[in-house]
Length: 117
Ligand code: SF4
Ligand code: SF4
Image (cartoon, rainbow, N blue to C red; front, side, top):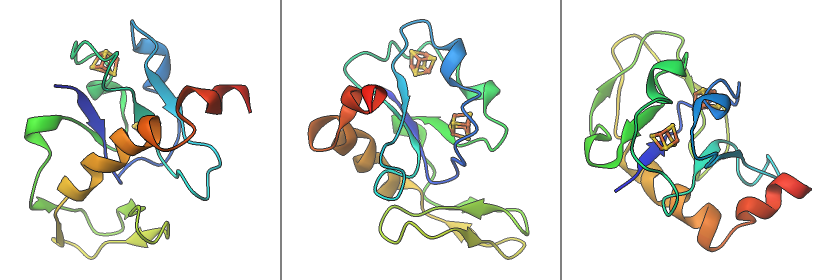
């Protein structure tokens, strides 16, 4: 298991410094990897990152919501379009499609190499 950063991430990096195993990295290039990502092989599921996120973007993988009610004006960046979307009050969104990009970033994308770009 791991924690997952979802499309509610707006890249303010508040979660990075609290991770005891330094497994959260910013996606690069940003136009392809718009969020921060958690290395599932390294995450120890301590939960320290969750309360640090001002956008409540981080979930335990098994608890990523299928129908999260968004606040009006809340912004998210879906991985398929990489566009900033602004929610209507009460709009619900399935965040489970956000799970796979966390794996893809490390398996198919730049992964930790992004740190050295
Ligand atoms: S749950 Fe703990 S180990 Fe996993 S990314 Fe968050 S802070 Fe790091
Ligand atoms: S998950 Fe939250 S705290 Fe971490 S970079 Fe994204 S918006 Fe910032």
